[in-house]
Length: 173
Image (cartoon, rainbow, N blue to C red):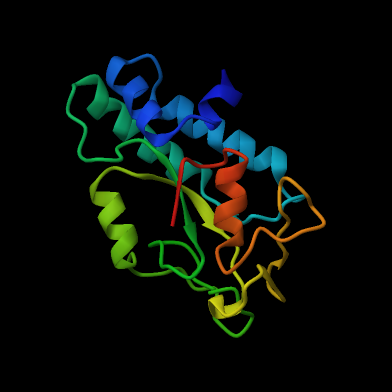
């Protein structure tokens, strides 16, 4: 069932939440397990936020059980490219020149998805400041294409692309 959950579309997964056939906690655990199983070979993630993600998923599950999801993506496992701020987590922008202090707020796109109930499972790799058509940097190394590890998944969202391709997150910024 874990593999099935990881490869569902957002619409299908939301339908499963609505019918109570699957919970956001199950979907989040499946996405985190997939991420852990494919790292470090793919190098799609700079950070996994397991505790935060599971807390967000439990809150989403409670809303779905009451039939009151808070938004359009409530409960969907989501990744955030390291060019965007995710409050409480480092915002390195793929660069060794940036501090690893936690972000004090969400980027607007993250804040919007948070209002709609997205579950943030981690931060994905990017090229330094998003300035390359491939995803590699001195801080994160080379991100691999899951279908052919000798190739790139592209850039600057290579970590996001690789994570979605293997089911380690339903949505990706």
